Length: 412
Ligand code: EPZ
Image (cartoon, rainbow, N blue to C red; front, side, top):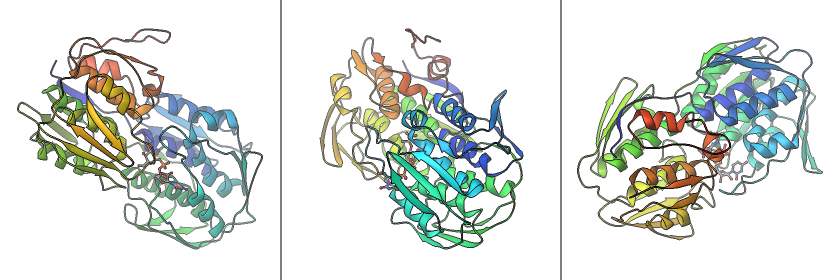
């Protein structure tokens, strides 16, 4: 069924989680609006409470008050649940001068190392010991420094930004990540009184040591959620408008969709995708922003399976992000992987069967394939999808999709 209609986007998961962590930098209350109702946010709120902060929902906002009783220990059970918990390390060492964080495990898209985080904090004067599966960070007062990153890591940039707000003097982060979520974090920190120059560029200057106060901030829209719905619209031959996102946040996806023959209209916080003809194959390389987003790679494999020819996707960001390929091939796709390359043969008639979501974005890709496949597709382990998509089935039904959810946590 072609998807038709408008979808209002939720706040960005990969910004909201960091803004919640940044609230630890002050004892004043912070209000974060347009927080998506997803399980990763619930995990982060639980983490903040475990650290001794008050945190709770106020409608679609979350209010955080990290008062005097703050402790610096992030428990294993929570870090294991969500490796992004590592993002509390920078704010804790900034606020308390110490942090004890369980080592985040890898996940099935790669080892997810944190060496850039560690080395950067050491440059700012922190002492770090890793033993018994915990990272112990101590500092008698962070000092501003030049912190070059070997790779524009999103998480390392964020941890170092937050730590640098408490480092005496100037910190310069070189080769910083340029994602829109970094810019949103910088806006949040500036709202708290931090002095930051260069947000969104590869060189960010922070004048640290200023006391930070509370802030009321609205999270930017989720560009990966938007890209997922736009890809589903193109895959089903429909017409969908996303509401709430600056099209500039998805520039390369929109360029690639146009190259495939998809019609794309851009407006103020509106993007409309229409596909009513054949799809042309394209080659894609995932790269740090403004390159093609790795978080849209699995979903794009589905679209390229429908193209009239062979496409190649090169995954340059994560070591092992083709896990969903086997499940897509069970739906009839013809994808061959070799190292960092996936060769996608098209067009392939997809036919429904039972499949297993391996991770968040792979799960979204399987749902996208199910919307196109002939017959019924049953996607299992959808708890992965709940980590990053607010009400996926509700939003899809509103676009005309025939999708239902059942089982232990049935909602729609
Ligand atoms: C963030 O992960 C996002 N997660 C990811 O989204 C996203 O795919 C990624 O950025 C890239 O855009 C959140 O924001 C919570 P990185 P992060 O540090 O910060 C290596 C999703 O689906 N690396 O830029 O972990 C690392 O192993 C998730 O929403 C080191 O080697 O990304 C990876 O190969 C998935 N050492 C690469 O860099 C380090 O110290 C990119 O990692 C840090 C990273």
